[in-house]
Length: 53
Image 1 (cartoon, one colour):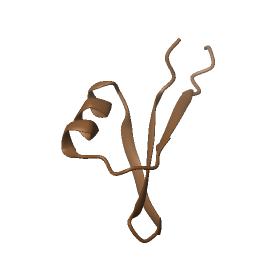
Image 2 (cartoon, helix red, strand yellow; image 1 turned 90 degrees about the vertical axis):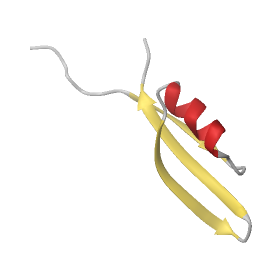
Image 3 (cartoon, helix red, strand yellow; image 1 turned 180 degrees about the vertical axis):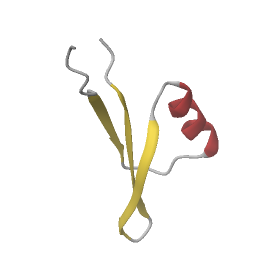
């Protein structure tokens, strides 16, 4: 058998995203895995998707 290890790529966005922007990222294969607010009025969105060859 070959190596079945999944390869991922990651994206961090440090701005407010609306539903349309989140939908567009999802349509492009990005999965939202976390949202962190390290400071008042600041959001960091963390996405992952399977790496493309």
